[in-house]
Image 1 (cartoon, one colour):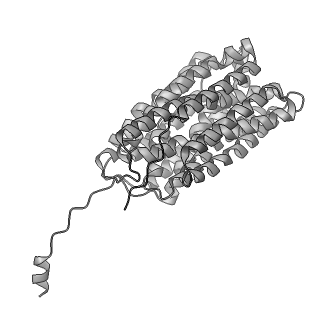
Image 2 (spheres, helix red, strand yellow):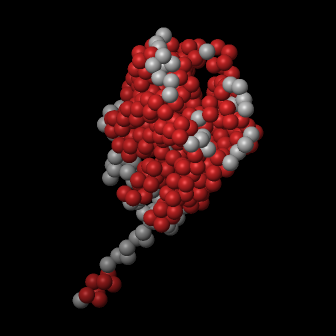
Image 3 (cartoon, rainbow, N blue to C red):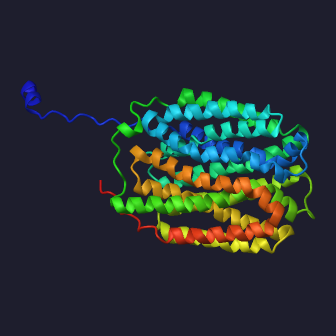
Length: 411
């Protein structure tokens, strides 16, 4: 009887393998910590540029800023091959390359003695740092039940790196030297890489070869339109992000010179602003799971315009409040690009599409980083803040073209 029933039953369909097991809580924490380090290592230079300028024998910090352009150029340009690595080679392998390559690059930067050595070492650092966004975020988001909440917490972790960069360099410059600001995160990155190698499960298939069902239904034209919109919006958003995070140390020093002068205290204040502003990303991330993206995104960018305009006329503690406003609005806009990517792009090509979007955005913003010092030197920070308000206004035009949210795919 049992044999007859067994022989007459239809054969089971072959299992479709996934790209890799779902990230465990420990691996998820390591991926978030990697995001913190990714932003921290790129901003140690901007936070300690005055000390590096003095050590290298230059007269003005503005003269040294163009030497960091290669880091941000490669942070963007390197995202394109990094995305291909993640989809076609494997995200676990690519993340190990991120951890160990970034650690070695930090130690290399700490050993530099001249501006051109610094420029070369920072360019190498930007190349390895470019791996995280197109690889780590898709790895974290695969099959997330509430992707908006995951994006929000991950983005907050990334922007805590900005806060820690200001805090770390403020104290290392006061207590030791600017070189310790690169040595410490380099050693931390090495330790996290060893943990990740031990805890992250091996991938059975690279994501591009795996079968992964889409959460949302959308037409090919809507997907293309959404990719164009988020690339444009990410480019303008990247200009705002890189102008503020690279220029805030000197901007705050100028606008708060009557109330704060000690580098450690200034770093502590900047850290507090970044931490408070980063909370907006958790709030916005949760909201993207519940409400339509376009009106929410438009409201956040309108807030950027308003607070930038207020900051042009403020000084002292009033400037501090305006700066908190525009940083919260800039940070709060970051989760939208990943939320749109999750809704419109299949996981099998998400690393490549993320890499392409980040590559274009950061190549645009690298021009801003290179020009930050010369523009401020020639025109002043008030002109630069007006320019950032205009850039935020351009973002509104791009977001208005975003297609309606696609309906969720039925089970």
